[in-house]
Length: 285
Image (cartoon, rainbow, N blue to C red; front, side, top):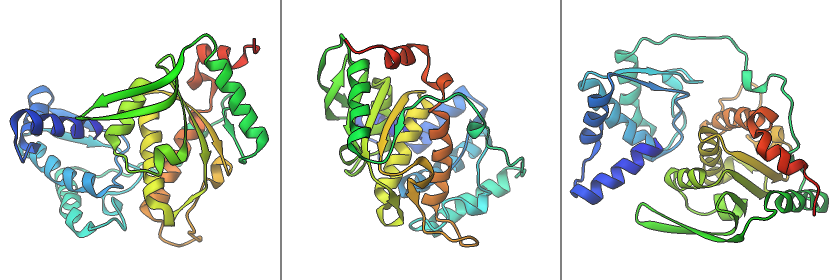
């Protein structure tokens, strides 16, 4: 979806078209006759409206859609803004695709692996000192300076970066201000390691912040980046959904469960990799 948003912007700039979706669908159809979406979820009104047009154009162009999701079609974008406008997309998927339920029930990301300490909680002097130590080790012999990224006709300056590879930034700076999937994609393309500090507990009253955090996490995960966190709560308590047993789970709560699974996997030594682990284990000079 991030690439689709980027292509929409490019077509509007280059061709001044108000409806780039048919062009994008035809470009995809010219290259691929089967399109696979892994872990389809819809949490954003913009994506919801975009998918309705995109799926229809792709199907009309003869593209075969294959998708996995943690939710059945009828539960996609559940409780979302203007969900009635998304219902035709659900009917399109149900009518055009064969729905198969796979109820294995095993989250392989959470299966036992060797983990490294890269998630610190609660917010305290001890956690802050640990983050400072990690920052010094990772940035040893690298130039520490602000870095500006230019993309999609706008720019974003990050104050604490090292070697163009490592970013240290607060949750308020990254997730409490307006940002799009394209912003987080650019960040993930640029930085190999992101140190995110002062992460508060999130809930349904802070849906915008929660969605941005999930989008950030997805971007880092899909680009296989390393995320080091300083948070107020443990991973399992990071999102307070307020949902009691038997209640209908909000889309944010459902998406956060999936994000938590990814966050757990990103703590593993296999994910972090030898180069970063060696830096984190190196003595301070």
